[in-house]
Image 1: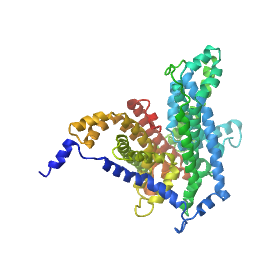
Image 2: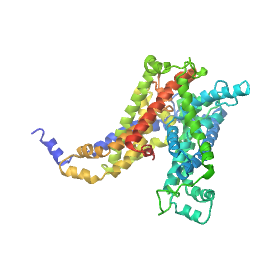
Image 3: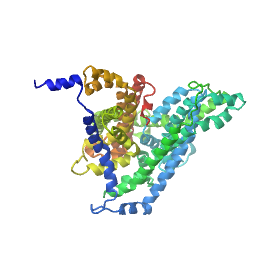
Image 4: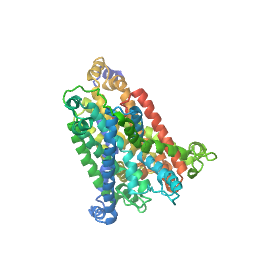
Length: 570
């Protein structure tokens, strides 16, 4: 008799789990999103001594020239990076999507490799290649010209623009290539029929139609460059040239000025929100598509005698973003002394053995990166799935609000989010600073929108009639969710897990504010080894990160399909 009621509820499915899902999701989002962002706003108007509210932090942050110069540098950096990324990515997309240029599949693979390569690792590689005195390219040029040193200086604003632009090209490429694939061929065919040259058709028909995609790529690259920490930290701090993100990092050096950092981060947050809304509005119009049309397949433009010259020019982008950096990192990791190069007598596997087996710090850092990334991916996937299910099935009034909150971290740069998490959880009642939990919270919050965006679409595609049929046969909603919906979404759940895990193990901008020596990750170890000038260790950890990432992406492509990486778009 005691168990009769629960069994009856199981048979009839009358138990309503909607409020439970809603309350649980609300509590989790409160911890992950609302409290950190709320603390960030609150602490920006707090006096350093914890007294009454004040606008003094804003006055100090935006009136002193020492703090205004990094803002100007950030704007110059972001605009230059975005402009170069568009100028390189747009023709590259057209050549690969619409022309008969040789090696198009290989180009796509290399651009994907550049996309999954963190720009700070690219910066490390280019330090090995183009440091003023020790870079291999500079040394080669100097030995050939008999000069004292080479002409390149990667430790400069121009050097940072060069490196960061290389790793932002995939944004424009992806946007424009997607626009070209959706573009109807009828207008281009009509232009060719009327005698227009391929160049005139490109400039007067094709590019204007994909203009929204080009603008979208520019905005995304601008935002990435504006909020990037790693590459500016490695290339500009040695040059004593600060941008907003490196200045925020300096606020956390002794003495820590959290309230000033919070105020200084507000324009970065506002710019991100504004530009993302503008990008969504532009791309939402989809003016680069036309109604009707032949769609799908396009006739490739014959480049004639320009095929190989254009191939050579196009190859410069993957050469500089993937081939040379990967070779430099690999050669350094295999050299006992990196400056001597990979020559007989200097080749060794010592650094891999040292990093994986011998050195306790790097061994812990590798374990931390993988375990924190796995934990964040698991938590984010579960939360995103339950919230997507709650919102799509309308299990509770106002459930759609949870989805909006779930996407909120998308508009918060990682470095700004880290400041909010530090401000919220570096003191009681929930003291997480110094523990693994604060990094897992940061990674989960940072990449939760990726998982939610992916799963929200997939949950909506599952016919609710399947669940209703199960409930009619006596299953509870929870059982229908576990036995019907979740199995149907196995591919989406796995893709979401991987799409959080991959960036989590490479995350630097939030980890650098929240780690301690006991919770260091591979990325923070790279940062510390760079400061110490141990480039052999830097290259080894970088190769390990890249190797893990490439293996995961390759396996995912094999089992989840070529659209695996595209599922993260929002």
